[in-house]
Length: 371
Image 1 (cartoon, one colour):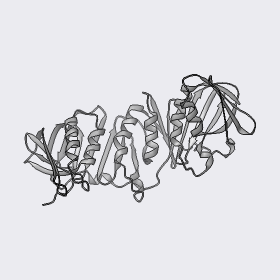
Image 2 (cartoon, one colour):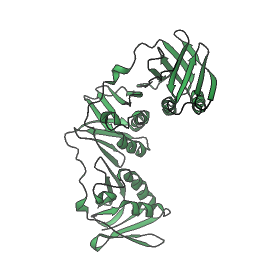
Image 3 (cartoon, rainbow, N blue to C red):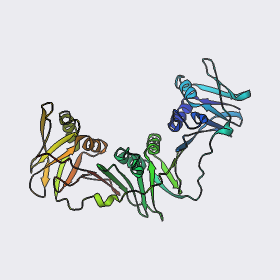
Image 4 (cartoon, rainbow, N blue to C red):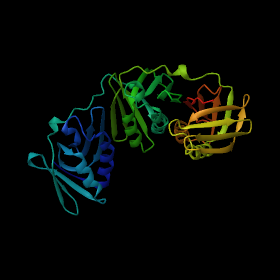
């Protein structure tokens, strides 16, 4: 087997595929890329058994073949080369020779027979979404997933397909995000829990505006776009009934500039107690006062922002600055609306104006204030 390929084109696909390679894999061969050359197309596969990435690049080859190549060594070599054609050939005993304009590099490959077979798309249901919406759904939710392995369902993102709409939902019991894409035409009604790590790889690989075909069966979800397929093993668990925690009656509403709010929050949070990260919002009809104090170190800070407040009397409510900051950082909108009821009930953040056919809701639990 021997082929020639552009080093930059190869590097682009290797970077995508490298996402599924773990440092201490279950099987040594999973430290490799599987290279399969057929009809002048090189298909690159990587897997950690939880996630499998399959991507391809055009090459010029004189014969087909298949080989497993150590990922780190190959990736580091191609990264270190400027753009140029490189020739890769496989010789006896799985010996690999890479030739560039600078010289020759030899490394030892492995037999492709030992490489795990990727999951097959069998008994799947499918739908197609625009890549920007998929990217947005992942970006808006992955930060709100839990890291608690005892709550397995909450370590992933719930993808709920309900005929005409699709929800991305994530929560860690302190914060919750629900992003809905409407106007979908499908006859599917299914709920899936997709691992966070796999979704991060999908998000990183979605760099162009394109259609994404999403297929799934009981065990796996398959994302197909461009020249890439990413397969994630689904989390087999029951997702909590999240709608129950979203308060319905929220008479108080605060409209505020997101960037100003976030900048102020970052400064004030420096003075908050490091254990609670608590910041206190005192909201009246014309302004929001943000304050924090750390009595252990006599640290204290206060700032005032303009806002529009409606729906009732002034309110004082405490939040974890880290959680609030994460939400404001992910939102892309200039103006946001906070919906509140009492200091002991969750606050809701929504964009003031949304894209047609989309809705986004972020919920953050309050931090109870001491007397």
